[in-house]
Image (cartoon, rainbow over all chains, first blue to last red; front, side, top):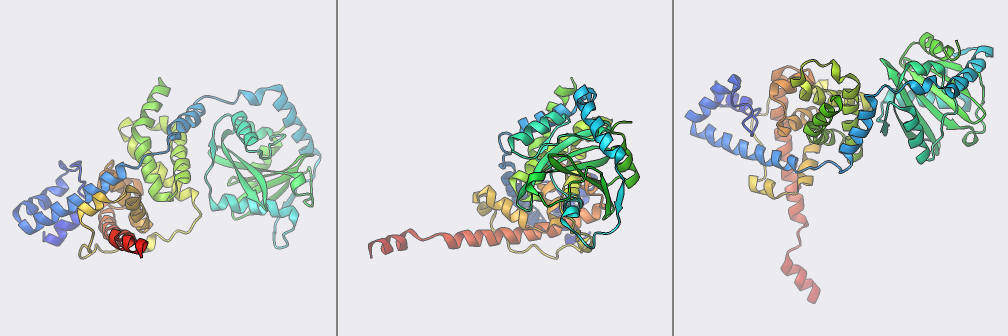
Length: 251
Length: 183
């Protein structure tokens, strides 16, 4: 082993001595003991590494981060599905079923001529495909609704019953054409992302109660509206799975 | 009991995880989100990990994967995969200068290192994971980690030297300031 090879290895030697017992460093360290020039280099390297590591250790997380982690993740450890079984939710879900059952399913195969009607689903799909971080994490959707309310963001009136099989992951708000849109994420394996926009904010958008389906960038989506909101669900799951999820609303 | 264990896990690891997240995301808000998301995933799936001793590696690995998943795709990392190690260490500020530097400046310099090198370099400086564990977390060979550390350190030294020079140039000598004031 020449000194360049020894240096290459020793650059991975942690300054806190955590690697002292690792055999891979043994020969390189021994060489440094024998070679004063290499020893000086190692001393300089370790001093520099220690100084940087010490600086990094002074970075303190925001004061509320610990509490936020415990509050968010701690709640997720509970089973929080009982709310779905409550009559009010079942009633809402049934209404979605009726909307769905009487409707004709249309599959959008092209978005070449994007209109306001399909602009939100396209935006939603691209948003999911691009990746994002959630602002609020909780397995209890009531907590998510409460948080969205504090943000004055659109609140879902009804949720598809198929979502009862999914755990809520979290939510956030985002801006679409200068208006607030809520995003709630659910998932157990495959994730389902529900975008909610106020109809009043987008009066020119078609407000079909019949779910309209779209495949884009490998994602399936469905869009519909009620008297209050426009909804778009985007999922990496198949179109059939999405239809089945929505169809579960009252079956 | 499970809650107690979870709290202990959070207390033990959330600070270094946040620091790692900060180096990846480059802003406090996203770093907090990423750290929360990591523990949230643990809360959902962590119990599947039978070997508690591997919890730390699991958390760092998960945080990094979430970072990759969550950002907008622009994957240009592989092109730099197996560059040879730097031939020599570039000029760097004296250790005393680094020690006297504001921690924020050091973090800024670290954040200027290319991501492909910054990720293993930050894990190295956090001193939580060995080079083998870093290799496992990033799913790259050990030699690649060593190579990236070598290159990353070279970039960090250069970035620190630049920061140090920049901060030096901003200093207005007291004498000239005084002279101007009274002229």
